[in-house]
Length: 220
Ligand SMILES: [Zn+2]
Image 1 (cartoon, helix red, strand yellow):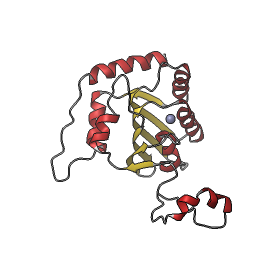
Image 2 (tube, helix red, strand yellow):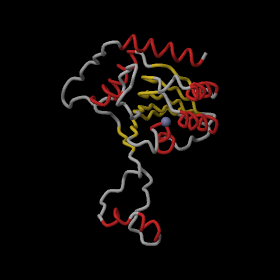
Image 3 (cartoon, helix red, strand yellow):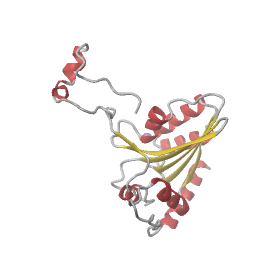
Image 4 (tube, helix red, strand yellow):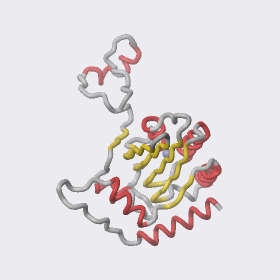
């Protein structure tokens, strides 16, 4: 991570110090994480994938967002970056964190093709954040592939998804093959063992069709 948050022990700012007095007493060796915890990495643990990405109809207990990304930068030569983000707190959603930490700006003269595989579709404020990023960076193309639709019955969410589409953001629901793709490319495999094949769960296809129909209705 390039930027570190201010260390509270710096004594110039009395107010901040008072606020962080309790924390400041304990010596901190690592101050790598921002105030809210965003976990990033190359591959996510299989357990998280199996739980968080499952395309169940009701996502109870699945209160995090997992976002796997592929950034293809088409300049003189094409560069590809990939990784994943997970939001731990409500303070910053994974979508927001992506634009804050992974792709804060796009250079002119090159094209950015970004694909996200996200456990669920964005909330209203993340949709706004995405739209702003697309408006600011005309050379950015974003495709979002989602496991589930988040609160799609809410009119504000429906409006937000429509606005996303109007802003040029592509969105579709993860098919069984997409889950398999994420499994192969973004999930940790046991070291030294042959990669375990993806095991689809019951109803994976039905649930995909269910969400696909709902998304089509919303974006109609
Ligand atoms: Zn959000």
